[in-house]
Amino acid sequence: MLQKNIIIIFLALVLVLGGLYLMQPKYQKISSLAGAVKNQRYELQNKEKYFAELEKISQRLDQERPKLTIIDSILTDNKNVTEAALFNFLQKTTTEMGLTLDSISISGESSHPKILNIQKITFNLSLKGGYAELKNFIAVLYQNAKLFNIESIDFISPGKEGDFSYNLYITTYSN
Amino acid sequence: MAIEISSQAEGKKTSISDFLLYFLVFLTALFVAGYIIMVIYQKNLENEAVKLSESLRRTESEQELEQKIFNYERKFKSVGVLLNERSNVIEVFDLFEKSTHPQVWFSKFSFHAENKSITVSGQAASYEALGQQLLIFKDNSQIKSITLSGVSLSKEVGKTAVDFSLSLSTNIGPEMPQ
Image (cartoon, rainbow over all chains, first blue to last red):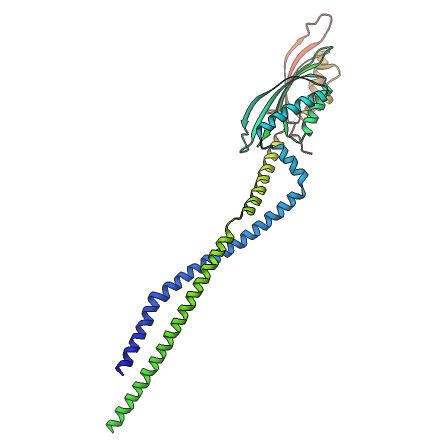
């Protein structure tokens, strides 16, 4: 009988102490772990939705490849390539349009005040030629895939004979 | 009689203690089984947490995809701003071609896109022609204000003309993308 009572007391103690020092901490650990896993599952779901959406956008962008090429050429990544190509383009276009390019120089380079990581490159062009030729040149410039902006234009009439003298400040951009 | 009562009470005590013992043994077994289940459950949760952390980590291809989209988003926004800033010089020329009086000619022209201002110098055949030119500009909705300056009779010999300078403020908008 005494032995039985000792076992009862021992088991009761085991249950009480086990509940306090084993079960309760384990339960708390599992609760917090389950909470964290639930959050991670939610995050994963969101991540999957997010990347599915990005994938759709990417597919749509790939379908619009020609337009993206224009966007890419507007903001060329390499500044040196841009300047060399621009000098060549401006020289070639002025000649093709029947204008005489007297001089061309880079008058300034600065960061765009409103857009981060965009560099403004301003060219100064001195040209000679007819008014119609200048208009054609500007039209070609504005139709070009590279974005040009005419900041200012000054010209003086030649009088009865001769060509107009133009002074243009043209800005273009690089990434 | 007293002996009988004592024997019955002892029997009851024995059955209660037996019941309590079996109940506690059952509870202990339940406790051990529950603890084992909890250990297994915790292990499973830990494994799942590790897998989820792995899945949540952005892979190289996901980073590339994200970079590609963000890059184009930034470019679209930038190009939008740049197109909005682009001056419409052709429209300025068209304005002058359509609005110049037949007896007025311009010898100097200056356009500044930043403040959309135009400064011109020229000659008019008469004060009347110059007045009509000003009225034509005034009636044009693309011209916000006109400032006339330096009006004088031409010094050219044998010619009656009026020299003048004009400053025009326009509201010619940006070149629309095609």
